[in-house]
Image (tube, rainbow, N blue to C red; front, side, top):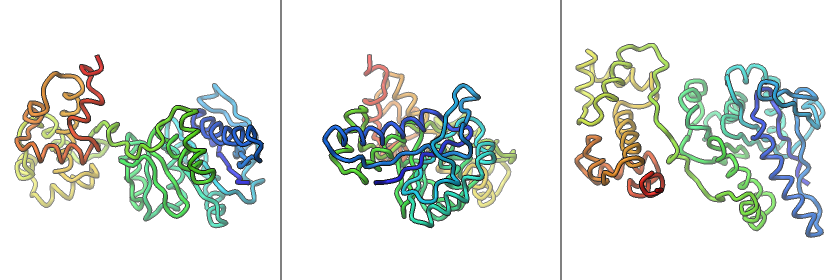
Amino acid sequence: MKNISILVPEGAKLGSIEGSHEAFREVNNILSANGKSPLFDVNLVGLSKEVRLNNGLYNVKTNKLIKDVKKTDLIIIPAFQGDLQKALEVNRRFIPWIVDQYNLGAEVASLCVGAFLLAATGLVNGKQCSTHWRAANDFRKKFPDVNLVVDKVLTDELGIYSSGGAYSSTNLILYLIEKYAGREMAVFCSKFFQLDIERDSQSPFIMFKGQKEHEDEHIIKAQEFIENNYQDKITVNQIATICALSRRNLERRFKKATTNTVVEYIQRVKVEAAKQSLESSRENVNEVMYNVGYSDPKAFRTTFKKITGLSPIQYRNKYSRQIAV
């Protein structure tokens, strides 16, 4: 039997905890209904016997304290809400226990922004990790040694797993069910919970918001120029001149402040404008392309798909309000 420890940290999201608990419990129910032994021993593990969540709206009683769990097979780190730095501080006592359990052979999985607690252990330094796209800039600044792959719905590397944002975490739970209980069981659970079992990218859901939580006024000026003039052809040299910086100095400071190169930032701003147009307007793809400053259809399609994971036509078909109507 696999021992699964679902952590109940302070500030965790109740749905993240209950969703994981229910999924593994349902596997046991299905097995029992077919005359088979349960596969999972699922426990809610915390730092105290009772944990208040959602600003005291809910109280969750834990099955075990971390000091009582000497050996487990899988640790689930749920998502948090609110101030992530505060969440790390109040839950710091989980960190050495997670590391010890991993060294004893346990696997570790983080859901959504639970990746912050996972990364705080140091176990994903030099490894791939995903999280909610909205928290990507903060994650990169706090954990520069982690290879953040925010476009991925899930990662799997050396017994450490992570998932993208919000409900995409269910894809990781299904992935783990398939690993431990087999493909047939995972497919059944995907149908039971009505989930898409094999979505592998959260790129289509990413809404680009330029990182401006820095104090480099020259770079803020560059960002604002790009955002106000995305419909034009913009060059790095042009921006360097406007900011009174050398091109080399601009590129170095821009990357440090925003985690994007200047060219990447220009592309992302243009694609974000194109996405909004494809969602809400009646313009065809070529008209959208010209309106965001592209003249080469191939270059536009290539850049759009690189950032969103979909072609412009696929994106329109999936998200257009006009098509939905």
